[in-house]
Amino acid sequence: MSADGVTASGASTTVAVFAEPVRRVGGGWIAAFALAWFGVWMAQLTPVQLLLPAQIQDRLKTDDWVQNVIAFGIISGISALCAIVAFPVTGALSDRTTSRFGRRRPWIAAGAAIFALSLLLLGLQTTMVGIGVFWCLALIGFCVLTAALTATISDQIPVDQRGYVSGWLSAPQAVGTIAGIMLVTLLALGTFIGYTAMAVLLVIFVIPFLFIPDAVLRPEQRAPWSLRVMIDSLWISPKRYPDFGWTLLSRVLVNFGNAFGTSLLLYFLEFGLGDKHAQDDLIVLVLIYMVFVILAALVFGRLSDALGRRKAFVFLASSLQALAAIILAIVPLFSVAMVAAGLLGLGYGCFLAVDQALATQVLPDPETRGKDLGIMNIATAVPQAAAPLLGAFLVFVAGFAGLFFTAAVFAFAGALAVSRVKAVR
Image (tube, rainbow, N blue to C red; front, side, top):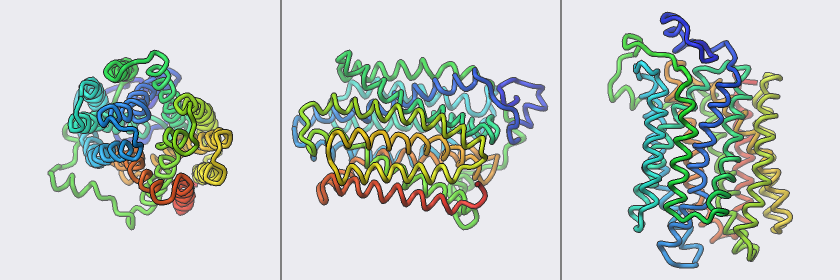
Protein backbone atom coordinates (compact mmCIF):
# COMPACT_ATOMS: atom_id res chain seq x y z
CA MET A 1 0.00 0.00 0.00
CA SER A 2 1.39 3.38 -0.94
CA ALA A 3 1.34 6.34 1.42
CA ASP A 4 -1.68 7.84 -0.28
CA GLY A 5 -3.75 4.86 0.69
CA VAL A 6 -3.71 3.08 -2.69
CA THR A 7 -3.07 -0.62 -2.46
CA ALA A 8 -0.29 -1.83 -4.68
CA SER A 9 0.85 -5.40 -5.37
CA GLY A 10 1.31 -7.85 -2.53
CA ALA A 11 5.09 -7.46 -2.60
CA SER A 12 5.06 -3.66 -2.46
CA THR A 13 2.40 -3.73 0.26
CA THR A 14 4.68 -5.90 2.35
CA VAL A 15 7.60 -3.54 1.89
CA ALA A 16 5.40 -0.59 2.87
CA VAL A 17 4.83 -2.01 6.33
CA PHE A 18 8.25 -0.87 7.55
CA ALA A 19 9.36 1.44 4.73
CA GLU A 20 9.52 5.18 5.31
CA PRO A 21 6.53 6.63 3.39
CA VAL A 22 7.40 8.95 0.51
CA ARG A 23 4.10 9.60 -1.29
CA ARG A 24 1.92 12.41 0.05
CA VAL A 25 -1.63 11.56 1.09
CA GLY A 26 -4.62 13.24 -0.51
CA GLY A 27 -7.60 15.17 0.74
CA GLY A 28 -9.77 12.06 1.23
CA TRP A 29 -7.25 10.48 3.60
CA ILE A 30 -6.88 13.71 5.59
CA ALA A 31 -10.66 14.24 5.77
CA ALA A 32 -11.25 10.73 7.16
CA PHE A 33 -8.37 11.19 9.62
CA ALA A 34 -9.71 14.55 10.82
CA LEU A 35 -13.25 13.20 11.23
CA ALA A 36 -11.98 10.28 13.30
CA TRP A 37 -10.10 12.62 15.64
CA PHE A 38 -13.10 14.93 15.87
CA GLY A 39 -15.16 12.02 17.15
CA VAL A 40 -12.38 10.88 19.49
CA TRP A 41 -11.84 14.29 21.09
CA MET A 42 -15.55 14.95 21.45
CA ALA A 43 -16.07 11.61 23.20
CA GLN A 44 -13.06 12.04 25.49
CA LEU A 45 -13.02 15.74 26.35
CA THR A 46 -16.75 16.44 26.73
CA PRO A 47 -16.90 13.99 29.66
CA VAL A 48 -13.69 15.43 31.13
CA GLN A 49 -14.85 19.03 30.85
CA LEU A 50 -18.54 18.64 31.65
CA LEU A 51 -20.27 15.26 31.98
CA LEU A 52 -17.96 13.49 34.41
CA PRO A 53 -17.58 16.40 36.89
CA ALA A 54 -21.36 16.95 36.82
CA GLN A 55 -22.00 13.23 37.37
CA ILE A 56 -19.61 13.16 40.33
CA GLN A 57 -21.09 16.32 41.83
CA ASP A 58 -24.59 14.88 41.49
CA ARG A 59 -23.45 11.71 43.27
CA LEU A 60 -21.67 13.54 46.11
CA LYS A 61 -24.51 16.06 46.55
CA THR A 62 -22.24 18.80 47.86
CA ASP A 63 -21.41 22.32 46.70
CA ASP A 64 -17.91 22.08 48.21
CA TRP A 65 -15.81 22.40 45.07
CA VAL A 66 -12.71 20.99 46.80
CA GLN A 67 -14.48 17.70 47.55
CA ASN A 68 -15.77 17.53 43.99
CA VAL A 69 -12.34 18.21 42.48
CA ILE A 70 -10.63 15.69 44.75
CA ALA A 71 -13.16 12.98 43.82
CA PHE A 72 -12.76 13.85 40.13
CA GLY A 73 -8.99 13.88 40.54
CA ILE A 74 -8.88 10.46 42.19
CA ILE A 75 -10.92 8.89 39.40
CA SER A 76 -8.80 10.66 36.78
CA GLY A 77 -5.60 9.57 38.53
CA ILE A 78 -6.65 5.91 38.55
CA SER A 79 -7.60 6.14 34.88
CA ALA A 80 -4.14 7.62 34.19
CA LEU A 81 -2.56 4.44 35.54
CA CYS A 82 -4.66 2.47 33.06
CA ALA A 83 -3.43 4.73 30.25
CA ILE A 84 0.22 4.17 31.22
CA VAL A 85 -0.26 0.45 30.55
CA ALA A 86 -2.80 0.55 27.72
CA PHE A 87 -1.02 2.98 25.38
CA PRO A 88 2.31 1.16 24.88
CA VAL A 89 0.95 -2.38 25.23
CA THR A 90 -1.79 -1.97 22.63
CA GLY A 91 0.62 -0.04 20.42
CA ALA A 92 3.08 -2.95 20.63
CA LEU A 93 0.34 -5.47 19.85
CA SER A 94 -0.76 -3.47 16.81
CA ASP A 95 2.86 -3.47 15.57
CA ARG A 96 2.68 -7.29 15.47
CA THR A 97 -0.87 -7.75 14.16
CA THR A 98 -1.09 -9.89 11.00
CA SER A 99 -4.77 -9.42 10.23
CA ARG A 100 -5.75 -9.28 6.57
CA PHE A 101 -7.28 -5.87 7.41
CA GLY A 102 -3.84 -4.52 8.34
CA ARG A 103 -2.04 -3.79 11.59
CA ARG A 104 -3.86 -0.68 12.75
CA ARG A 105 -7.47 -0.99 11.55
CA PRO A 106 -8.49 -3.90 13.82
CA TRP A 107 -7.28 -1.95 16.86
CA ILE A 108 -8.97 1.25 15.73
CA ALA A 109 -12.26 -0.64 15.41
CA ALA A 110 -11.83 -2.50 18.72
CA GLY A 111 -10.83 0.66 20.58
CA ALA A 112 -13.82 2.59 19.26
CA ALA A 113 -16.16 -0.23 20.30
CA ILE A 114 -14.73 -0.46 23.83
CA PHE A 115 -14.75 3.32 24.20
CA ALA A 116 -18.34 3.74 23.00
CA LEU A 117 -19.77 0.84 25.03
CA SER A 118 -18.02 2.05 28.19
CA LEU A 119 -19.46 5.55 27.75
CA LEU A 120 -22.95 4.09 27.38
CA LEU A 121 -22.57 2.09 30.59
CA LEU A 122 -20.90 5.01 32.37
CA GLY A 123 -24.05 7.04 31.89
CA LEU A 124 -26.01 4.47 33.90
CA GLN A 125 -23.75 4.52 36.96
CA THR A 126 -24.98 5.91 40.28
CA THR A 127 -22.08 4.92 42.56
CA MET A 128 -18.56 6.33 42.74
CA VAL A 129 -17.10 2.85 42.22
CA GLY A 130 -19.20 2.32 39.09
CA ILE A 131 -18.27 5.75 37.74
CA GLY A 132 -14.59 5.07 38.35
CA VAL A 133 -14.64 1.58 36.79
CA PHE A 134 -16.41 2.57 33.60
CA TRP A 135 -14.44 5.78 33.13
CA CYS A 136 -11.26 3.68 33.36
CA LEU A 137 -12.67 1.28 30.76
CA ALA A 138 -13.62 4.22 28.55
CA LEU A 139 -10.10 5.60 28.77
CA ILE A 140 -8.64 2.18 27.94
CA GLY A 141 -10.80 2.15 24.80
CA PHE A 142 -9.56 5.67 24.03
CA CYS A 143 -5.95 4.49 24.40
CA VAL A 144 -6.44 1.43 22.17
CA LEU A 145 -8.08 3.56 19.49
CA THR A 146 -5.64 6.47 19.53
CA ALA A 147 -2.47 4.37 19.85
CA ALA A 148 -3.32 2.75 16.52
CA LEU A 149 -4.68 5.93 14.92
CA THR A 150 -1.57 7.94 15.82
CA ALA A 151 0.70 5.23 14.39
CA THR A 152 -0.85 5.72 10.95
CA ILE A 153 0.99 9.05 10.73
CA SER A 154 4.36 7.31 10.82
CA ASP A 155 3.08 4.44 8.68
CA GLN A 156 1.60 6.47 5.84
CA ILE A 157 2.65 10.14 5.98
CA PRO A 158 5.99 11.39 4.56
CA VAL A 159 8.08 13.58 6.83
CA ASP A 160 7.51 16.75 4.80
CA GLN A 161 3.71 16.44 5.26
CA ARG A 162 3.54 15.37 8.91
CA GLY A 163 3.23 18.84 10.40
CA TYR A 164 0.20 19.64 8.26
CA VAL A 165 -1.47 16.25 8.80
CA SER A 166 -0.76 16.43 12.53
CA GLY A 167 -2.59 19.74 12.50
CA TRP A 168 -5.68 17.75 11.52
CA LEU A 169 -5.14 15.65 14.65
CA SER A 170 -4.91 18.81 16.75
CA ALA A 171 -7.54 21.15 15.31
CA PRO A 172 -10.40 18.67 15.88
CA GLN A 173 -9.50 18.66 19.57
CA ALA A 174 -10.71 22.23 19.95
CA VAL A 175 -13.71 21.79 17.67
CA GLY A 176 -14.70 18.50 19.29
CA THR A 177 -14.55 19.97 22.78
CA ILE A 178 -16.74 22.98 22.08
CA ALA A 179 -19.13 20.98 19.87
CA GLY A 180 -19.64 18.39 22.59
CA ILE A 181 -20.11 20.95 25.36
CA MET A 182 -22.55 23.02 23.29
CA LEU A 183 -24.50 19.92 22.24
CA VAL A 184 -24.96 18.85 25.86
CA THR A 185 -25.68 22.31 27.30
CA LEU A 186 -27.83 23.84 24.55
CA LEU A 187 -30.01 20.73 24.23
CA ALA A 188 -30.02 20.30 28.03
CA LEU A 189 -29.07 16.65 27.70
CA GLY A 190 -29.02 14.62 30.87
CA THR A 191 -26.07 12.49 31.96
CA PHE A 192 -27.10 9.26 30.23
CA ILE A 193 -28.26 10.95 27.00
CA GLY A 194 -25.08 13.07 26.97
CA TYR A 195 -22.82 10.02 27.24
CA THR A 196 -24.95 8.15 24.70
CA ALA A 197 -24.66 11.00 22.21
CA MET A 198 -20.86 11.03 22.60
CA ALA A 199 -20.69 7.25 22.10
CA VAL A 200 -22.85 7.27 18.97
CA LEU A 201 -21.02 10.21 17.40
CA LEU A 202 -17.66 8.58 18.14
CA VAL A 203 -18.61 5.49 16.15
CA ILE A 204 -20.10 7.52 13.29
CA PHE A 205 -16.97 9.66 12.86
CA VAL A 206 -14.44 6.83 13.20
CA ILE A 207 -16.09 4.48 10.67
CA PRO A 208 -14.91 6.35 7.50
CA PHE A 209 -11.25 5.88 8.48
CA LEU A 210 -11.75 2.12 8.66
CA PHE A 211 -12.08 2.16 4.86
CA ILE A 212 -8.56 3.60 4.45
CA PRO A 213 -6.26 0.76 3.29
CA ASP A 214 -3.70 -0.48 5.80
CA ALA A 215 -0.55 -2.42 4.87
CA VAL A 216 -0.62 -6.09 5.89
CA LEU A 217 2.14 -7.66 7.98
CA ARG A 218 2.93 -11.28 7.10
CA PRO A 219 3.48 -13.69 10.04
CA GLU A 220 7.06 -14.43 8.96
CA GLN A 221 7.91 -10.72 9.16
CA ARG A 222 7.26 -10.58 12.89
CA ALA A 223 10.25 -10.62 15.20
CA PRO A 224 10.37 -13.38 17.87
CA TRP A 225 8.13 -12.52 20.78
CA SER A 226 7.78 -13.32 24.45
CA LEU A 227 6.20 -11.57 27.42
CA ARG A 228 9.66 -10.71 28.72
CA VAL A 229 10.67 -9.25 25.35
CA MET A 230 7.55 -7.06 25.27
CA ILE A 231 8.03 -5.85 28.85
CA ASP A 232 11.69 -5.05 28.16
CA SER A 233 10.72 -3.18 24.99
CA LEU A 234 8.53 -0.78 26.99
CA TRP A 235 11.69 0.82 28.37
CA ILE A 236 13.45 3.08 25.87
CA SER A 237 16.79 4.20 27.28
CA PRO A 238 17.13 8.00 27.20
CA LYS A 239 20.90 7.49 27.18
CA ARG A 240 20.75 5.38 24.03
CA TYR A 241 17.98 7.43 22.40
CA PRO A 242 18.38 10.93 23.89
CA ASP A 243 16.22 12.70 21.29
CA PHE A 244 13.30 10.41 22.10
CA GLY A 245 13.88 11.05 25.80
CA TRP A 246 14.00 14.85 25.49
CA THR A 247 10.92 14.89 23.24
CA LEU A 248 9.02 12.72 25.73
CA LEU A 249 10.06 14.92 28.66
CA SER A 250 9.08 18.07 26.77
CA ARG A 251 5.66 16.61 26.00
CA VAL A 252 5.07 15.66 29.64
CA LEU A 253 6.01 19.12 30.89
CA VAL A 254 4.06 21.12 28.32
CA ASN A 255 0.94 18.99 28.69
CA PHE A 256 1.07 19.35 32.46
CA GLY A 257 1.39 23.11 31.97
CA ASN A 258 -1.60 23.18 29.65
CA ALA A 259 -3.68 20.90 31.87
CA PHE A 260 -2.94 23.01 34.97
CA GLY A 261 -4.04 26.07 33.04
CA THR A 262 -7.29 24.61 31.67
CA SER A 263 -8.59 21.73 33.81
CA LEU A 264 -9.88 23.95 36.66
CA LEU A 265 -11.10 26.88 34.60
CA LEU A 266 -14.73 26.36 35.55
CA TYR A 267 -13.80 26.41 39.25
CA PHE A 268 -11.56 29.46 38.68
CA LEU A 269 -14.45 31.38 37.15
CA GLU A 270 -16.96 30.27 39.76
CA PHE A 271 -14.87 30.47 42.92
CA GLY A 272 -11.78 32.46 41.97
CA LEU A 273 -13.61 35.29 40.22
CA GLY A 274 -17.05 34.85 41.81
CA ASP A 275 -18.58 34.65 38.32
CA LYS A 276 -22.33 34.03 38.54
CA HIS A 277 -22.40 32.98 34.89
CA ALA A 278 -19.42 30.65 35.08
CA GLN A 279 -20.74 27.94 32.72
CA ASP A 280 -21.70 30.45 30.01
CA ASP A 281 -18.39 32.29 30.36
CA LEU A 282 -16.50 28.99 30.20
CA ILE A 283 -18.04 28.44 26.76
CA VAL A 284 -16.79 31.90 25.71
CA LEU A 285 -13.25 31.04 26.84
CA VAL A 286 -13.38 27.65 25.12
CA LEU A 287 -14.59 29.29 21.88
CA ILE A 288 -11.68 31.75 21.92
CA TYR A 289 -9.28 28.94 22.74
CA MET A 290 -10.77 26.82 19.95
CA VAL A 291 -10.34 29.45 17.23
CA PHE A 292 -6.66 29.97 18.04
CA VAL A 293 -5.93 26.25 18.42
CA ILE A 294 -7.34 25.59 14.95
CA LEU A 295 -5.49 28.47 13.31
CA ALA A 296 -2.19 27.65 15.00
CA ALA A 297 -2.37 23.89 14.37
CA LEU A 298 -3.03 24.22 10.65
CA VAL A 299 -0.87 27.27 9.89
CA PHE A 300 2.17 26.44 12.00
CA GLY A 301 1.98 22.75 11.15
CA ARG A 302 2.19 23.50 7.43
CA LEU A 303 4.82 26.20 7.96
CA SER A 304 7.04 23.80 9.89
CA ASP A 305 6.82 21.38 6.93
CA ALA A 306 7.74 24.12 4.47
CA LEU A 307 10.73 25.30 6.52
CA GLY A 308 11.80 21.81 7.56
CA ARG A 309 12.01 22.97 11.19
CA ARG A 310 10.26 21.67 14.31
CA LYS A 311 12.15 22.72 17.47
CA ALA A 312 11.78 26.47 17.02
CA PHE A 313 8.00 26.12 16.69
CA VAL A 314 7.73 23.86 19.75
CA PHE A 315 9.85 26.32 21.75
CA LEU A 316 7.61 29.21 20.65
CA ALA A 317 4.46 27.25 21.44
CA SER A 318 5.61 26.36 24.94
CA SER A 319 6.67 29.94 25.66
CA LEU A 320 3.28 31.32 24.55
CA GLN A 321 1.52 28.95 26.95
CA ALA A 322 3.80 30.07 29.78
CA LEU A 323 3.07 33.72 28.98
CA ALA A 324 -0.71 33.08 29.02
CA ALA A 325 -0.51 31.46 32.45
CA ILE A 326 1.64 34.27 33.90
CA ILE A 327 -0.77 36.95 32.66
CA LEU A 328 -3.73 35.16 34.24
CA ALA A 329 -1.85 34.68 37.54
CA ILE A 330 -0.95 38.36 37.79
CA VAL A 331 -4.26 39.86 36.61
CA PRO A 332 -7.16 37.49 37.51
CA LEU A 333 -9.98 39.14 35.54
CA PHE A 334 -12.38 37.63 33.02
CA SER A 335 -11.30 40.11 30.33
CA VAL A 336 -7.69 39.04 30.91
CA ALA A 337 -8.79 35.39 30.87
CA MET A 338 -10.10 35.93 27.33
CA VAL A 339 -6.68 37.24 26.21
CA ALA A 340 -4.98 34.35 27.99
CA ALA A 341 -7.31 31.86 26.29
CA GLY A 342 -6.24 33.20 22.91
CA LEU A 343 -2.53 32.99 23.75
CA LEU A 344 -2.94 29.53 25.26
CA GLY A 345 -4.83 28.33 22.20
CA LEU A 346 -2.22 29.78 19.87
CA GLY A 347 0.59 28.09 21.80
CA TYR A 348 -1.10 24.74 22.35
CA GLY A 349 -2.38 24.45 18.78
CA CYS A 350 1.11 25.02 17.46
CA PHE A 351 2.54 22.57 19.99
CA LEU A 352 0.05 19.80 19.21
CA ALA A 353 0.71 19.86 15.47
CA VAL A 354 4.46 20.40 15.38
CA ASP A 355 5.35 18.28 18.42
CA GLN A 356 3.44 15.32 16.96
CA ALA A 357 5.45 15.64 13.76
CA LEU A 358 8.66 15.95 15.79
CA ALA A 359 7.78 12.82 17.79
CA THR A 360 7.45 10.73 14.61
CA GLN A 361 10.99 11.76 13.61
CA VAL A 362 12.73 10.58 16.79
CA LEU A 363 11.29 7.04 16.99
CA PRO A 364 13.98 4.39 17.64
CA ASP A 365 12.71 1.63 15.29
CA PRO A 366 10.28 1.61 12.31
CA GLU A 367 9.10 -1.87 13.34
CA THR A 368 7.82 -0.60 16.70
CA ARG A 369 6.17 2.68 15.71
CA GLY A 370 2.89 1.84 17.41
CA LYS A 371 4.52 0.96 20.72
CA ASP A 372 6.89 3.94 20.69
CA LEU A 373 4.15 6.43 19.82
CA GLY A 374 2.01 4.77 22.49
CA ILE A 375 4.69 5.71 25.01
CA MET A 376 4.65 9.24 23.61
CA ASN A 377 0.87 9.35 23.99
CA ILE A 378 1.22 8.64 27.71
CA ALA A 379 2.76 12.09 27.97
CA THR A 380 -0.49 13.60 26.70
CA ALA A 381 -3.09 11.50 28.52
CA VAL A 382 -1.50 11.26 31.97
CA PRO A 383 -1.11 15.03 32.58
CA GLN A 384 -4.74 15.57 31.54
CA ALA A 385 -5.85 12.88 33.98
CA ALA A 386 -3.58 13.82 36.90
CA ALA A 387 -3.81 17.62 36.67
CA PRO A 388 -7.23 18.10 38.37
CA LEU A 389 -6.13 16.46 41.63
CA LEU A 390 -2.66 18.03 41.64
CA GLY A 391 -4.20 21.35 40.60
CA ALA A 392 -6.70 21.23 43.46
CA PHE A 393 -3.80 20.72 45.89
CA LEU A 394 -1.95 23.70 44.38
CA VAL A 395 -5.04 25.90 44.70
CA PHE A 396 -5.46 24.80 48.33
CA VAL A 397 -1.81 25.67 49.10
CA ALA A 398 -1.19 28.73 46.94
CA GLY A 399 -4.50 29.81 45.43
CA PHE A 400 -5.32 30.06 41.73
CA ALA A 401 -2.33 32.36 41.20
CA GLY A 402 -0.06 29.57 42.41
CA LEU A 403 -1.77 27.15 40.03
CA PHE A 404 -1.20 29.40 37.02
CA PHE A 405 2.41 30.21 37.95
CA THR A 406 3.06 26.46 38.18
CA ALA A 407 1.50 26.02 34.74
CA ALA A 408 3.91 28.65 33.39
CA VAL A 409 6.94 26.96 34.93
CA PHE A 410 6.02 23.57 33.45
CA ALA A 411 5.34 25.01 30.00
CA PHE A 412 8.64 26.90 29.84
CA ALA A 413 10.55 23.89 31.17
CA GLY A 414 9.08 21.94 28.25
CA ALA A 415 10.47 24.55 25.87
CA LEU A 416 13.93 24.11 27.36
CA ALA A 417 13.70 20.32 27.13
CA VAL A 418 12.87 20.29 23.42
CA SER A 419 15.84 22.56 22.70
CA ARG A 420 18.08 19.58 23.62
CA VAL A 421 16.87 17.49 20.66
CA LYS A 422 19.75 17.11 18.17
CA ALA A 423 18.57 15.00 15.22
CA VAL A 424 15.67 17.27 14.20
CA ARG A 425 16.00 20.95 13.36
